[in-house]
Image 1 (cartoon, rainbow, N blue to C red):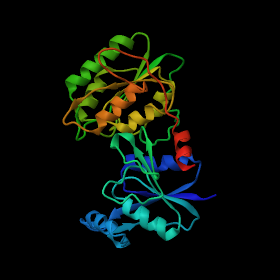
Image 2 (cartoon, rainbow, N blue to C red; image 1 turned 135 degrees about the horizontal axis):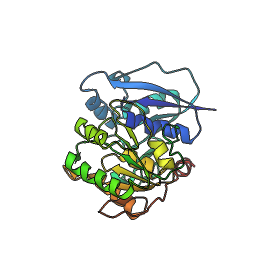
Image 3 (cartoon, rainbow, N blue to C red; image 1 turned 45 degrees about the vertical axis):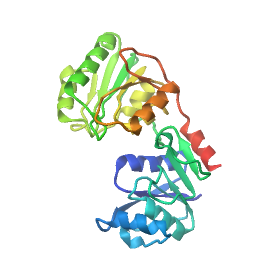
Length: 300
C-alpha cells in the first residue's frame, strides 16, 4: 500500500491537517521538514512558479525516506512550492490542504476551506472546515457525571482576549452549570498568562493550564461533555468540535481587532446549525460534519 509523504513548515496547525489526510485514508505517512533557505525564498518560489520553473534549492528539507508514495501533501505557504517539485520528481499526486494563494492551481488536488472563497475548478474541493482527525486520548474522564467543557484559545491578528470578557463568560458558565455538572477547562499554547491565572483562580473541577501541563484533553471533552464552549479565535479547535464527538458546541465571541474571513467561517457553521454563537442564550446544536466521507468523495 502506498504511503503519504507530508511536507511540514513547522506549524502545528498546518501539520495536523496534512496528517489528518493520511489518517482518514488509513494510510501510513512520513513527515519531512521543509524551510526556506533564504529570507527571499518564498518570493523567488512564487515568481518561479508563475513560469513553471522548479528550482528546489530555494528550500531545504530533511532527507526523503526511500518508500513507495502515492501522495505528497502540504499545508501552508512554506510547503506549496516543494509539494509540486517533490511530487513531480517522485511521479505521484500533489495535494495541498488549503488554498495555495499566489501559486498556479495546477496541483492534483486542492482541499480548500469555503471561507477562503476558492474558485470553482475541478481540482479544487471545498471543505466547510479545516481537515482534522480527532480521537479520545483518555486524559479526561467525567466519572459518570454530566460535564461541560471550556476550551480557551488566545489572541491573534483578528481577536483580542481580555480578562473582563473571559470573567463574564466563566461566571456565566459557573452560574448555569456549577451545581449540576462537572466543569472542565483547558487553556492552549496561545492563552495569555493573565487569562491562565484567571482560569486557575476559579478552582474548576478539572483544569489544564497548558503552560504548566502540556497535554490536550480537547478530544475527550468533545467525546464526553454535554456542551463544549470554545473561544472564537481558533478555526482548528472549532473545526474539531463540529466534526467529532457528540457535544453541543457554543462559540464564545471575542473582541475583534479587524474583520476577516474567520467571522464568515463561524457564521456559516451557525447557519448550518453545527454550533451556536453565544449571545446570552444557550442553543443546543451538535450537528457534525463527516470529514472522512467528504475526503473520500473528493478523491473519487
